Length: 395
Image 1 (cartoon, helix red, strand yellow):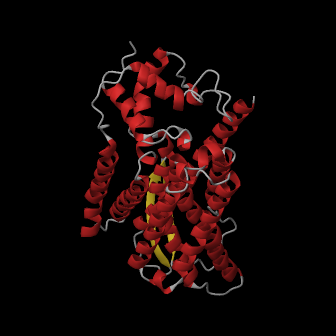
Image 2 (cartoon, rainbow, N blue to C red):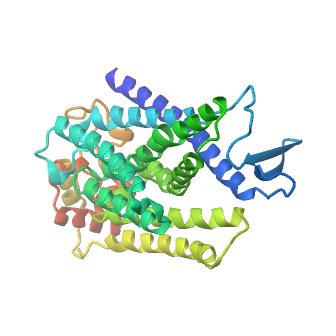
Image 3 (tube, rainbow, N blue to C red):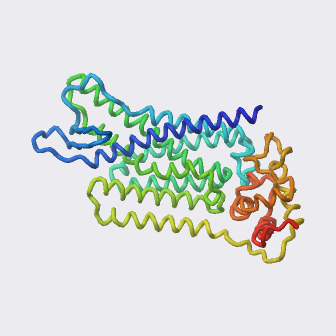
């Protein structure tokens, strides 16, 4: 019953997280596009630009003020809860899967001596420190130069990626890179973008001229969020693909995803603004090259280097030693009431059936066993890979 409730809680929270994420990402992309599509009007200096749109059989006119209108309308729409609930549901999902089962899913093979409580503490502190450092850098003189600031933020993500992949399990580490970036994005909305907009509104209500700096700062953080969105989405879906988080150099793959996503977003932004310069034009092929580089890096594990014939009996012995405790109709590993994902290796036919998954999860990546709790050796992985390559025969 506990496993059933766990699965339902995980599924429902994941569902909510995806729904709120779609809402947040959709509004983020729309407003960046809207800002890029604005065209200047000569008859009104208070209007920064306007954009005519057609959708669903209707015509819409959006206008952007240089600072704000002299008089606020009775109804003003705010876009913030999409971001808040995306982060809240994402954090709940992190807690349900990785904090609740920290010994199994969070702690990596390189930090087996770490307690579950310490691992959770490291996770929480790293997320908080990430936002604090990012915010301080943005507020420092470095934040006045767009290129310098972008390099600093990128280096922060590189350090975080290296740190997470060397302390947490592969899947948890890759997800933490996404949570790390997502926390910065949500904090931008909560601590900067919305408060600055409220300051502008308060000044208008008091009959004062709003400080344009509030809008400039909010736009800077909003643009950061826009460029970081695609990498975060990749991290969200990466847990289905061990070729990413299961690679020994998974931190390089995470960094490459940030580069590829950022370049692609830069091309889209410039294209939408009809301002494609040489940097924007180069960004698209550069993004494609970054993806090719990721594929090359992930392919570095292809081939086991083990050429001797491997009989099924030897492969089965390795499976019994390292895999059957979880992947069985009656798991003996603590914390497992059912076989993960319904994958069982109780019979030779079962092992043969999942040969491709064994190769992906055990041989080409270090995803399984979880956290390498059973200390599977490289030689054992190579033997399993050779057995699969030789036809995965069970006779």
